[in-house]
Amino acid sequence: MDRRTFLLATGAAAVAPAAPTPSTGATTVLFGDRSVKLGKIRPDPRDLWVLKADLPRINDFEVKPQGACRNDLCIPIPKTMAHGEWFNLSAFARKIGETVVADSGTHVWSFGEIPALSGSYLSSRMAPDFAVPDRKGRVVHLSDFRGKKVFLHTWASW
View 1 (cartoon, rainbow, N blue to C red):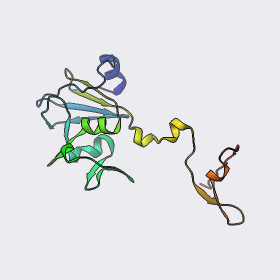
View 2: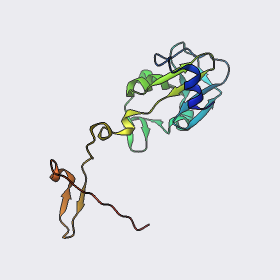
View 3: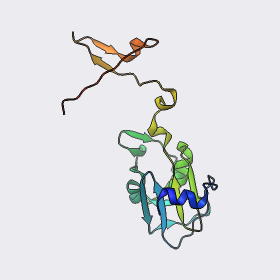
View 4: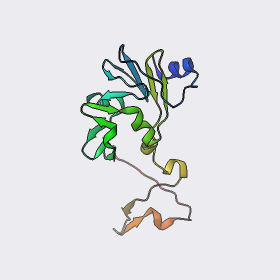
């Protein structure tokens, strides 16, 4: 089942709090364009506990000592969110402001976009500051031009 079919079938009316998931039967997790079938979950009437080893297949995160990490981004997590080999995926989603839709009848959990990954500049329409050398080798920051119109042209040789 893909994300669109799931959302149409549930009517997207079950937006958080998450529905209970049984301990038996396969559970499917939808994230982005992925549909990941999980054979083993930890039973919990409110949350979806997945194996830490399954987390990279689900959303590219992995649990490290500094938190849940994806590339250079690490989000600190409380100790209550991880127990042994288990990770509370729905609690993590609530912590980072991610939308969760669950259907206990079909054992499908759908997770929306992760706000921390989209960046605040998308909602503020402010480009992030960066620095580049100009033709004379002087370092120029984009923030030097705040309040002025800027035409930024980029080019790559490949």
